[in-house]
Length: 54
Image (cartoon, rainbow, N blue to C red; front, side):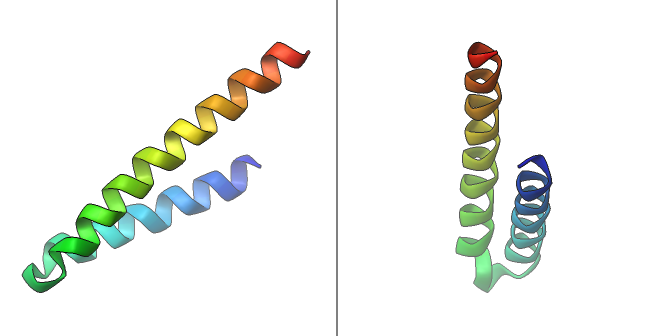
C-alpha cells in the first residue's frame, strides 16, 4: 500500500514541476498539487484506521 502511495506522490510532484515550468501548463501544476495533498491525506487516514484496528 505504501509503495503505491509513494509512487503516486512522486508522479504528482513531477506533474506539478512540469506544470509550473511551462506557463501554458499552469493548470497541470495546480492539479498536481491538489492530487499530492489528496494522496497524503488518504495515506494518513488509511494509516490511522489501520492502527485503530490493531
